[in-house]
Length: 453
Image (cartoon, rainbow, N blue to C red; front, side):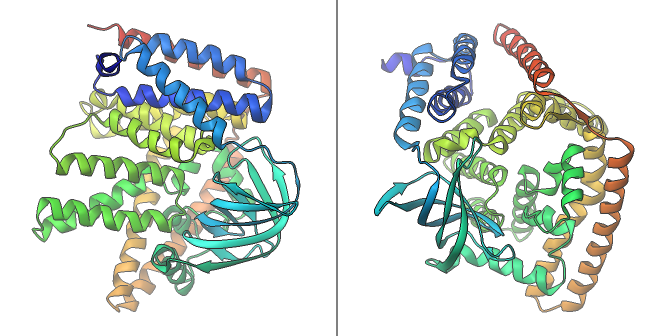
């Protein structure tokens, strides 16, 4: 058994183990929660196991698959709709709608432990809650087929701080955004990931154009924050290990202030694992770190495998890391195109199945908007934080005015492009057929890569 677990011919076995765990959790989820789809997932799991057998031990793969099945079985709770009370910890803050987990639900006079995430639609749509707060809510419970699987339509609620240091980053940034009148801008959405203040029509246009990932906190934003902090500490000649620890600590606070968003949490965990391995001087393949960080998330919160955000985030990142050696050899412009093309191609099956839309301009818009809008917005928000901390409010006011103007221009340009080039919409069957075709071609490509000498 020990030899079977150790035998491998790949530098990133945890990526295959993550797939095994996710498929196990998804099969149990579909069989218990949806009563459909488990057979096709079982066939998919068999195909993935056969492909993975060239890279990792089949025994180890099956072991992680069974582990995923067991974890999902013991944590997934079937609850009927009705009146409830709920007490839990805010795991993802926001305005009007929040996400809580590790709570207890009062139903028919009995408190039920509920570790999985729950959406709470606040009765006051302008109310704000922050990560780490304790939330109490009374309202009506509803079920959903997507993550989080339960939603409470709150009639009355309240939030208190238990550990104020956890909610402090989010409160501080929200206060600054309000102070400089940036809370309703697209630039603020780029930095915090909270798009609820953006008009509904503009949010829909952004999604249809395939650029919603630019207006939410993603790996790009967290990675840029890590790079900026790490570079600044290097300039100050801080020691390597101290620099890594300080960078990760500040990154943790920033990740908390974003909700935390799933993509931000995934990137933070990847950088945390990378930093730990670097401190102990133990090299690891980026795909192995991705698999390890994913394992942590799906084991702590098994129902998150039903989240389309989680699936899109990990599939896009895995595709980029797989093709990274080839991308690095190209020119800068070609790199930008390849990154956008690979990320978009990786999520086509999932986005088509979930949303039924396909954008023809997602890749070129991503290439143009990252340097022209996303990075200036992000750097501008950091400059506001620093200048306000130093008491130079004149600089903060000037930059905030520039960001408001830039956000207005970007909103109008995005709306115009959406009207000129609408997204392609597919009915359920064509979307499903195209998704299967892309998956089939992907499996052939991975099978071919797995048999290369």
